[in-house]
Structures are given as structure tokens and as C-alpha cells.
Image 1: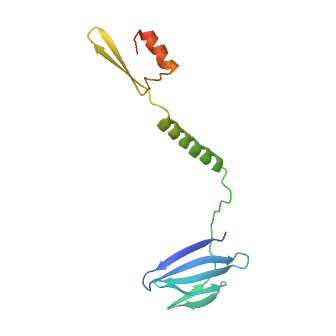
Image 2: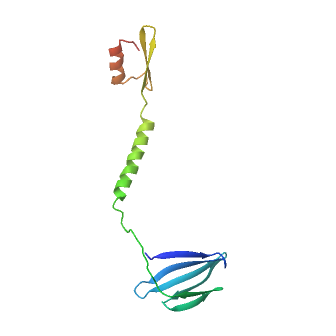
Length: 137
């Protein structure tokens, strides 16, 4: 819940981690991090100076600090519902049998090929289609 930032100092091989330790008193927490890990840490008030490793840091004060924190996402339910809907749609696509109808002309006749259905236990839909086409199993 704190505003944080970082700045790299490649000429000295350090990264300074910055955090507003106390926003009311304008206290800035500074951590110097090198290749081997944490080098030093301190807290500064406006106008103070401190040495962190080989670097001297002066904190003159804040010009401006803009931050945005979202503690609650009002669209979270919509995203969750969309994810659940996607999972359900994929489950339906993979577990329900696929039906494919292919129509091909063969001379003066029309050849109807049905795939994706169990022909040893046909459903009512397939039976109605067979009766309508006048074919036999």
C-alpha cells in the first residue's frame, strides 16, 4: 500500500529503491541495492543528506508525486464470468460429439454423408434425418 519507485545508477553499479515511508511528514525511505544485494538503507526528510555505499544522496523534497492504486476492481466479476464461460464453451466443444454433414453430387443424385454420430445408437435427430432422406441404416 505504499508508493514505491526505483532508479538505476549504472555508473556506480547501484539501484536505489525509493518508498514514501511517511506521507504526512514527507519521509522518504531509500535502499541502495548492488549486485550482491542490499548495500545500505536509510530514511530522509526534505533537506537531509545521507551516504549509501559509495553514493551521497540528498533529498531536497517532492516536486510532485502522482500515484494510482486500485484496491477494488469493479470489472472483476465480468472477467471471472468470461473466463468461466470460455471454459464451459471449450468443454462443450471437446466433449459433445461433432456433427458434420457433407453434401456431394454424384451423377443425378445428391450424396449425404453424416459424420460424428454413433450409428449403432443413433439419436432422434439422426433418425429424423434418415427418414426425411428415405435412407436405411
